[in-house]
Length: 148
Image (cartoon, rainbow, N blue to C red):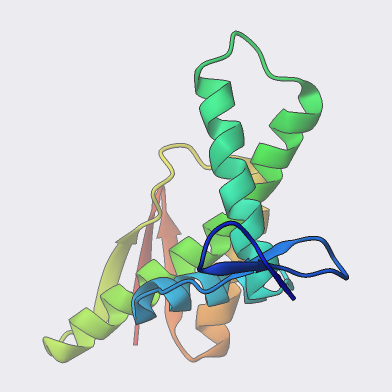
């Protein structure tokens, strides 16, 4: 490896890509790992995609238009992220409820309107996963009731 102009990263001669150490707290690492697992990607790929998307989002907010390809990529990433975000939210709320002696929890899905793609790509897979773990689920509008 050849050192780059900074002391904390290296350029790999084989890939011509920078490598550097990144310090994360455990909770953020778990979120990234869950998102990577949900989309069948490596953590490196997940982090790289999210960084690239953050710059794309900035261009979109400051632009008059985006092309259809960019819109599809943003939509696809939102659906991929949605499963991980909702699943982690459910697990946190279930853990909090259980520690308080409750046997059910109401989870706001975060979607004011549930489109068919949100239903099939995010909510139903979360419900299926929870049910495979022994939870009972019921969707009422944008709120999911989870019993255990």
